Image 1 (tube, rainbow, N blue to C red):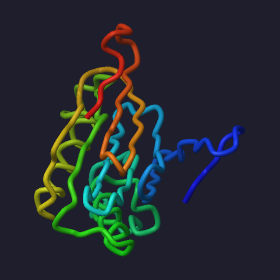
Image 2: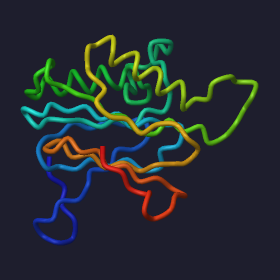
Image 3: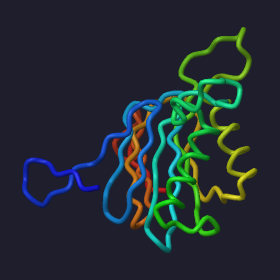
Image 4: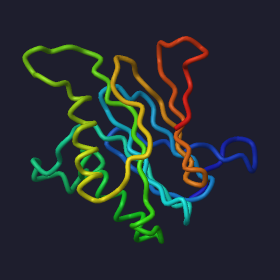
Length: 173
């Protein structure tokens, strides 16, 4: 899957929107914008350079009988679906690693207890542990939005935070 911009031969990032996911390989770049309480979940196999990115909005798809229609919407079902698609495309289940970013709690609602961002992070960590996929890096929580860019060849997840000073704005996981 190659997507090209206006200059010939210059690949453009593939946009992964809210409740979506994509699986690709090599130098293809996957990008998600506007992560607030949503969680970006990047899975990759460093040996085959196959990876995927999900932009999960909510924590628990198992509680939703319709989650199979939109598995990228929920942290738990997004991880299972990404992993399955990656293995179908040649990734080795035992080599897959994970990185996550997002899960901010940008608004406080005392009546709801833990915010959606915190619950998304907890659900993702629980599912990764359940499946035996190591979480090797994270940039989660806080009160700022994020944009992420993921490249399976290197396994690099670049995180850009909104509202921070220029020198702290971009981090590479």
